[in-house]
Length: 498
Image 1 (cartoon, helix red, strand yellow):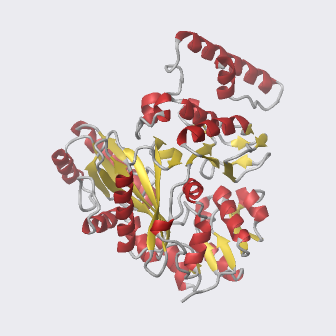
Image 2 (cartoon, rainbow, N blue to C red):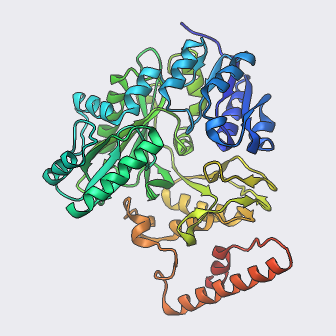
Image 3 (spheres, rainbow, N blue to C red):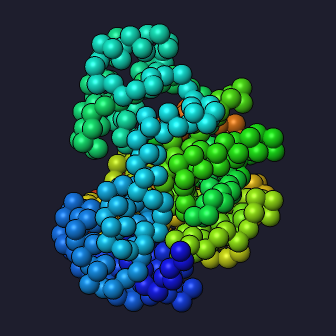
């Protein structure tokens, strides 16, 4: 039965809340934002038709408080809730509560979230529907001795992963038997802390694999298609840094095979809405199912760029009960798109968070440039939440032009007062291995270190040393004058090396 949505509550914050609000407004609906103590001045609060305070900055008392969000939804007379990504977006209990309250959850059913949120259930379903899997345990394990026996049978290196989690938490790579017990204990402890479930599973670690994911979308009438793949191999600490679409290494045949597997597993759990099926692609072309994310992905804009489809709009229409308006054969890949996650982090200091006041903020413009952001000048990057400030997305006719456009856009994007990953993104797009598509999930580990010196010849190293010394001297002088330092270490180096 179709249900018309008139008013949507966005159970999220920052750039994704604002991105959803824009589509909601574009299609003529009303939006309700919820915000914590830390977010009262954020752009998503100002742009929503209504904005309601829900508690302290601590997420557990605001954005993760199911009762508060449900109460706000009922008092605001909304028809539907969009969870965005992160926070409660993959919480089956939250989706079930929304359903029980007679509201529309803009996403899959609580049943589908439950199945795919449990990695072992997801693997069992994948096995049943002939989706390739890495060799490993079939069931969750909490006994270290039993897990070690299995690891010895599989052969090292192996990967220990939390049974009920994602995002790199509760995940440990084990290279030899003597490391196993310590890494097992660490993985279980982190899984317990992060997901209240210490169980893990063990699988073969593919050391030089590519991280490829497929965007799927399905309606409530049984129609399901994929919107091609995204390349997500450039990661630090299992967290994606740059994503692009399409992948530069997939053949049409491999794309078709992986896409069909993605649709098959989505149909297996009666999926509806937007979702992502993630794979590990080995050097020999073999691919293995990793997991399915039952939500909108951070990197969804690159798919929107190459297909011309607004995924948030599609999610809303599917939630209303509408049928997909296009078929698989209607879709084609147009051009190439790259996204950089602009995080408040210092790449030259092991990517440590760089919280603080944004003293300057100027966006890049021009053909093929899109910025999904959640900040403005004179706003604080809070320690309470994820460090992402924005997503810088570029689109061009081909991959080479997209990389060049990203470099140009980064040059124009000016953020002062904090360190960011902007210039790190420029370094990636200039790197010879990235440019020729010769990389895997070890790219950052293999080609970048915090000194950023070993890529250069002796003369360039001297220039870098001078630049760093100049930066430190200027920073000390600015501090003495009580003037905030807004010089970037990256930009000092770039000037001297250009």
